[in-house]
Length: 392
Ligand code: AMP
Image 1 (cartoon, rainbow, N blue to C red):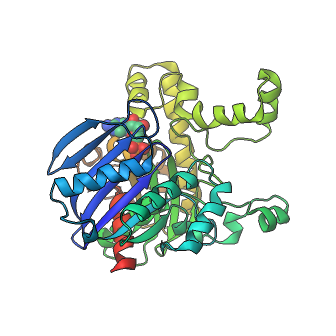
Image 2: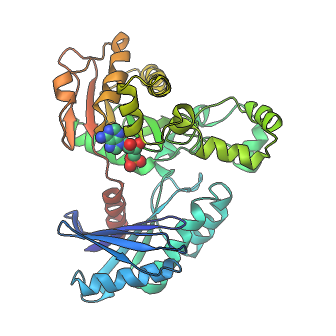
Image 3: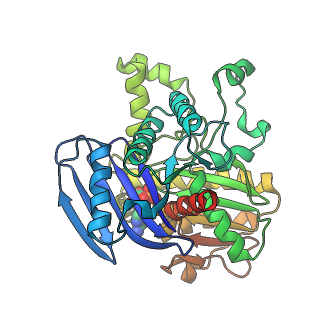
């Protein structure tokens, strides 16, 4: 069955087409700068990359060009061959604890939830509608970033704010990156040959979150009402004391939106280091003993370690700690620094294993009480698997 996996942003559209259930990628690509100057798209077919400079006035145009490419490259002979399309949707609120086939009700709910994710849900909806119009016979499925975390108990997801904020305004922890944490959990069931896995999954990319997984279900996560809570990220602050916002507004004569923008786009690695939001550049400067880079890297690691320690106590029994995302998968330095701090918990690194470069590998040594693994995440295939499950 041919299935498209789609991730639509406000000016971009990423896609992969799979032959399911074999999880074989037939074509993948990304349309960028939609609605802006200098728009273009890149495609990858059989390992060959193509880049085309085109005019992409809106998402519908991108979907039209994508459809032409599918036919011109003989991926499909007719668009009717595409049986289902899975769409990443950032916010499913507390309504969706699973992926769902999209109908009018779902479209309305995703639109209503835009209040909670104004930067993401409207863009996701534009993508869904553009595909529904052009490839109208395919079943459309929504895969929510929040869904995996709907098994978190109230005592973990509630903030200690007036209870009516939760009842009237949906103020609570939702958690994000659910598709990645779910994928890692399903991989670890295979790796450990066990269904009821207890894990601490560390998704360390430009955005970053940890998840405490008990018996295969999410029981806590570091992101909260928005993806700005928890860990230090590329440009996001993670946890802060909210009252500093008022202080900075006063001192810098900025309005609330400007300060929120600073917390979202000018904080994290970029804000502390003044070098970059990209962890590769921070690491390079760290290795050259740049003072701010050393500080950034240490703060980053400490925040992760403190959450791992919290989840270690919370879960009581942990089968494995996993590392994924661009940093988790590639940075042996960051993994080493994290695991060295976990020695009081009896967790030890094997430095030779840690330097390997594979999709999935063990990095803890034989004396470690908890196994540590690098597991390459694959949100796209998870979207395709969910879509296949519901549409087949
Ligand atoms: P993601 O959002 O998952 O694509 O991850 C992006 C982050 O991964 C960026 O901060 C990159 O600098 C980081 N990254 C990618 N490759 C490496 C690497 N080899 N070493 C350190 N960080 C890396």
